[in-house]
Image (cartoon, rainbow, N blue to C red; front, side, top):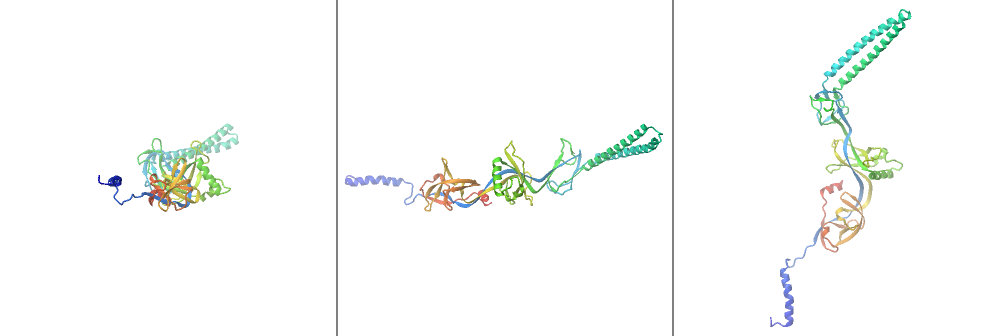
Length: 394
């Protein structure tokens, strides 16, 4: 070392630390750092329908409670539970013996009253000529007339009793008032029915084609839909159903799928409920294959406006910072640039970008937290979740 010149020793002192640092480096010689991988998607231009979603439940076009209208022991259940019943099909039979006896009693009472009427009428017919000859007093005639009138009234009351007993006997056989789907019976043969706490409503029969969906909207949503309706149908009122088919409704089921048939509003409340601030409507949907049953949870979607040729990106591509919205765009050389954007309505998992982006530009969706302006990245296509893809396709 002492034999080296001073310039040589200085050069060697600078070289040694570099060699040490090179030896301590974990990177193999000749290997460069890989660019950050990010998921990107092209900004899409398409027509975007704006819609309201309302929560509701399905109900039959007609839901008829099957009631026991007389008291008695249930003798038979004459239908298959959960199946369709025809109109006038026998559903239940209640023990008829007490009512048959009551009918016989009523008919006997009628016969007795008819006999009394015949006697009173005969007495009147005999006394009237005698009264004309002054053979009997006027008081006797008035008494005979009153007796005949009372007997006639008693016969009419007895006839009503027979009719009532016959009606009650008829109630022991319960028939389907409409054709429809019948549910599980609330009473079995041998049970006493028709009086609380025993079952009075034995079943429910539902006409489910078409099926109805009842849902409620807020007062603000009502005004939005009403104004859209009036703009599309000048001169019409929002309560006018004649033009309601111009705005079809979409039904979303509990599993997130879309019902294939459109529906239409065909009824509504007459006022806003002051207690809840909501407005109730009913819509009907075809149900030819009986997929829908009463009581199902449902969401009703109503389109109130369509934005034409709007730029759309996934919501997670938007970054908000102090009230400003921006996206990270991957340029042609794979470098990152930042764009301030003006956002619009949210539709599903996407958001409308009103300004700041053009169709086809690649925006970062995943890896946003790690990117910086001018950083070079390695883009890969963004894969939408399956549920999001299905919703977008519908």
